[in-house]
Image (cartoon, rainbow, N blue to C red; front, side):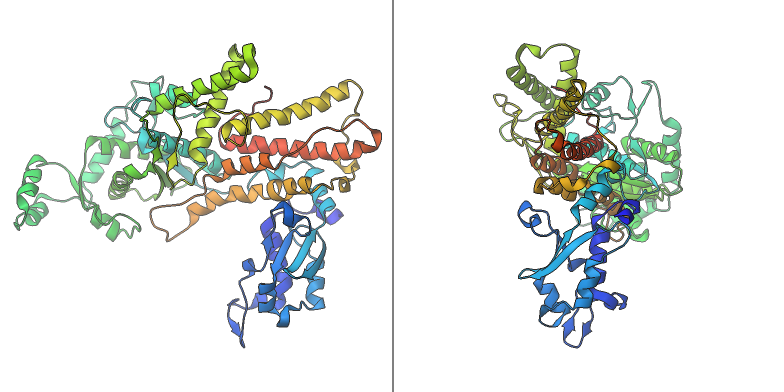
Length: 567
């Protein structure tokens, strides 16, 4: 147990790897781990074990190596005693302590030493479980095409719901990547005191601003000159050769006449000669307009302060604007920019029977939230405190509605005005925020009990016997939420590192929202009567409760939502 306490934070992935190594033995040293050995094919290590998550299965096992895997490894699926001994004596950095194991009909079942795991996670504080397992380095620019001038700065009344989804996603990705250690900047810079900045702040979005009279003219001139001298610029002689061949040339010649003297860049040559994968083959030749130059100058500004030579620009765009953003990305490359560029593409937002702008949608949800609060709390709902609560609850509602779905999939919203925002049931943001307040209420209940002399002060974790945490629900909260959280945070940075996947990148941006809702549905806590013989159990639960509260706050922070402490 002392080794467990002194070891690195417990993790699921190292445990699965250690279990696989114990089961496979020396076969892990074979270069091709799936090669045939006689008539037997050995499976990949990551497929040998499964972490259980359902309450039903966690009653009798925490990890399972299915019978099909055992049959692949051993004749008749019989696990040799030496192998079982390795499994039961599992050790390693970040590896969960094993309490026992047995072969049953479904396979080899392993149970974790739960008391030791509770002690390792809770006794010293859960800080290490609320951050990524490793810190990353690098600079990421989150570019939101929906906010670029075309030619004027967008307003809440011109912003579509699909574009609002991209802005929220960029904001969420920024918080996720910062948590992993990346330096993050946002693009474009917007005029301070503009209507769009006021709107974004109402949603808790802190976007970079500049004075209203600020210009980016010097960078725009630099970009214009770079494109004019680009090897991919299409010269007049090249254009003439392409358009003089006849065959449907009338319309083309008319277009050329209208754009005579305009700067044009052959984008197809850019992505072919630069080896850029995943770009639309129909990009062709592009006429460079002023708003394109402005867009590129903003990108140049956003990458100027990067501490590394090569930044990653993540263009967060709607599916309707994807083609246009690919043009911008390839134009930037043609201007000489060598930064890595990836595209995070969002599906459409649908509102059957209605057509709302982003401003109208936020106004609708704010009104519904205020009405729901007044129905629940009556005359209490007044003053600055309640204004702040309604603002946060509205932001939570909007974020969960637009971020809880896989980013490539469409979102369908119910925006009927006669509907309301329910404060009960698993309804996303409202559900999460009310239960966050409930968690604070439980702590307040304990602290009031201490003031009244009903409970003693909570002791140091080293003085507690964590074997008192015997309920399956308690273990489920630790095993499914507290321990895996850091590995969930790792995934977005890892997705950016994937090579050969083309221009698009798919990141599980919906996971934090789903994680919070699932956590709350698994949560069930209350305080018992202050009986002295139950104090140890109560204190162990308080340690778990405190870790869960920190977990809530950590996850909400990634959504840029402040916790609500009291309702």
